[in-house]
Length: 377
Image (cartoon, rainbow, N blue to C red; front, side, top):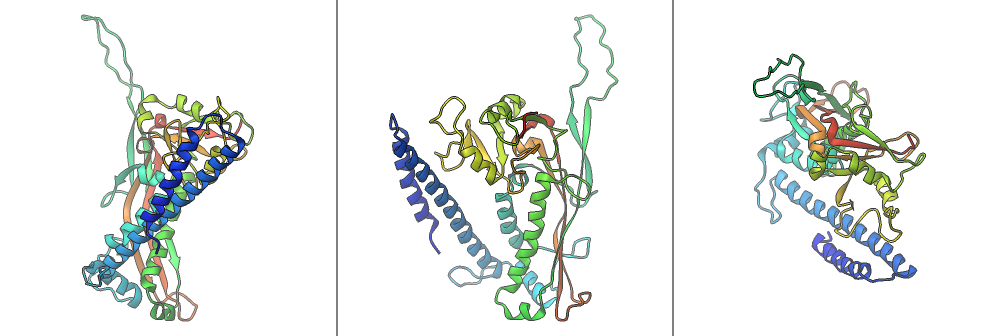
């Protein structure tokens, strides 16, 4: 496995070359082409370093979860070992059962999968986290509205206010489930099969959650951030079926200034690619997206990549500017659990593995997010 530190060192060297080139006055066309190549190489190396570091961490966590240190001595989690034994043998020993009857996934197994999922879902990662475990699967959230206010002299009458100064939004947690059906032979013969199967089940749950918090439309799904077009303020780009380079600044000036210090742009990788090819409205040399720090920024605000954010298109909303902790809530009612069912699958030799969790999400503060629309109105 390639060490991520060596990759980062190479990226730093290229970044030094790019910085010197950026400082060069009167850049030629060849200079600009070289800048583009360096930026692409640095971004690719940054991605490679991130993946390498994640793989190194995953290897360490897997060793700990199985009870094996990198040096080979046992230091691990009895919970994780017992859970993997259950996945392999279908015989639970000393596992925690949730109120659904499924066996709760232990934290040493859950944590690295959850961290990897949040890396591609900034909405999930940075939203306000509401723990509803042990209570009702839904909650009414206070939304501050502009209350009734008035002026009064020192001796003037101060009338009693009878209208409510708080509105509410409702977050409802609903089940997300995954159904995997491997054969008994596969489980018994493939090294690491229990770990692999468990990871697949959990990844299914979190990938579905990532899509829901981005574009869910309620019902059995969360109310997604990008789908909340009647809740958040919408700013058209001014270009039909496209984004204009003036849109990011229009969104910055439209958001409530109280939320600017923690705000970030959110979009998918394809939209980021389109924005990265644009120049600032006032300059043909300065790029709209600044990659100098290794992470993309527009006007100093981070650009976070949400995998399931909408693509640019007719009437679409592919870009958001949000203080995610104030703009969105993710609620959890039941932790992920796994239940083995070896009896109801008609295919001979197949074992049914059901994983589920109960979660929800909804927009919270309407002033904390602006949605950019790829259209003229």
